[in-house]
Every structure is written in C-alpha cells, then in structure tokens.
Length: 227
Image 1: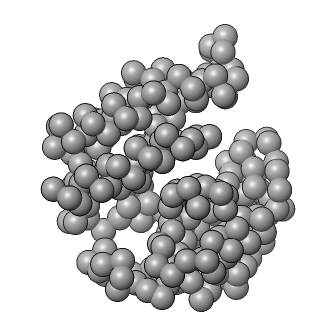
Image 2: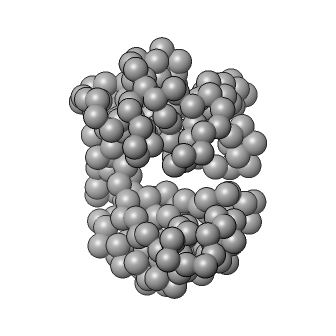
Image 3: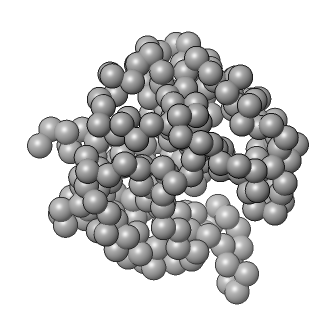
C-alpha cells in the first residue's frame, strides 16, 4: 500500500475479517496493521496529502471486536472528523488532519455524526456485477450522469473501472477478467469530459492498480482544475 500511495493513489477500499486480517471473499492475507503502518509511514514523509480510506467488514464475516476504537487509536491525530461542512472546505483548511476514514461494519453500529470515523453513507457507488467491460462502462457512465456536481453534494462518489468473474462464465481468473477492462479507463475519462460529467468525477477505482491508470487519473485531475 505504501508503494501505491507514493505512486499517487489517494483512495482505498480495505476489506477485513473478524480477525483483523485483510481479505477478499475467502482469501485471507496479512494483518491490517500492515495497512496502518504503511499509511503512517507515508503521512510521516508528507505534509499536505489527503487520503480517503474505507475499511469494511467483508461479506459473510463478523465484525472485528472494537475495530472502530482501534482505528481511532491508530490514526487519531490524522483523522478528519465526520462533519458535512467538510465538503465546503478546501483541502488546506482540513490540515493538519489528513485522513478521511470510513468504517462500514456488517452489524455493529455505524460511526455517529462528529465521530473521528465516517459512516458509509458519505462514500457511495453503484456497483454493477459483471465481467463484461462494455456493460460496466455503460452502467458507470449512466450512474455518473445522475450525480450532482462535486461542489454541490455532501458525499464522495466512486466509479469502479472493474470487472468481476462470473460463475456462469468459463473464465474465472480475476487477473484475466480485470485485464479486459483496463483499457477502458482512459476512454471513460475522456467520455466523461466530452459529455460534461467531469465535475462529477471524484474517485475512480480499479482492481490491481497499475501506473498507467494512476497517470490517467492525475491527468484528468489536472485538466479539470485547469479549465
């Protein structure tokens, strides 16, 4: 994760199980401490970089015990408190706090207003479960067109340039399916500008992040704020 931060990634979707291990479905990996340590390392080396990180309990798992308290203990000094007025501020006005941390448990109580953590209602998306790039592309553009401009809404909106293996398909390998949609990222960005939706783009996500995708997002951000 540290390498992704250095490369320019500023928003993350982290799934955890009841043992506080990063996971995706039945695949369990390292302790979430690794993620926290990478965030802290990056923040210690920078002064004004803002990060959005969503932690959520993976589907089918129990919530890790007191995970919200643990997150606050680990990231407390960096956390931007949950407050809708944040959306009316510049990034500079948020400093020295630099982490907007969303916690989405399966059954535990969601973070309350004023909490150092944010509830999932402040980070929205419209996920389309498909392995077909054209289907995902069209759905993403449709849902993006229905969003209000960034400056008028009080939530973050995520567009996912992802494809998901389907049990009905003969291709179940996540790398193969993900590679199908990679080439659509730049086209999506250019079409969003062409259709007048550039001011609605906020978080553009990808599985198995690649440098070309990051460069495209940085380019889109610079272009949007240069017009």
